[in-house]
Image (cartoon, rainbow, N blue to C red; front, side, top):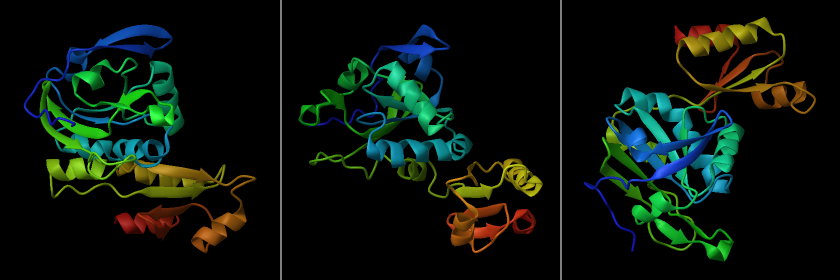
Length: 242
């Protein structure tokens, strides 16, 4: 049975990381001392739920977590540092610090190391999240012990809601642009000035004008969407903010 370790100190572990082509030993003291952080642990880098939902949402909500008293967000998996670094690059998860628990020592110390040999994974971390204040586990969000890979309580929105029930997550922003378009540059500058991260989709041989029209009903760029709702071009975005 997985244990809730609230009130306990995190395990003392040295993580073998690769930074700027050099080996760097990182201790739990380096990561947790004098900080209030969120850790989310998952079964494996590049796996479906981890890549489509778990990691991206924490990366997206990082500024909101910062506004609510969290210094850093850590993603932990029983993978080596090369895999974790490659996954971070693939996901453009620049807001997240990746923790390679390659030998599973931290996960074992947390009581969260589980047998995934049926999937060919060997020993991996159970999916969970926790808030850690100066090395002491303040709150844990452990997925239920059921068959498969449950994902319902360790997500970023649930943890954020615990920190502040009134917290308002930033909208999910997508902007469709065209290379060399000055209005696209203006729209991106407006979004950046408001502190809104965005996903940019640039028209090319695969994402064509036809795609632009099908998605937005418009023929011009940029086209900005917030939480799935079309805002429009740069002038429309300016009016929206005002």
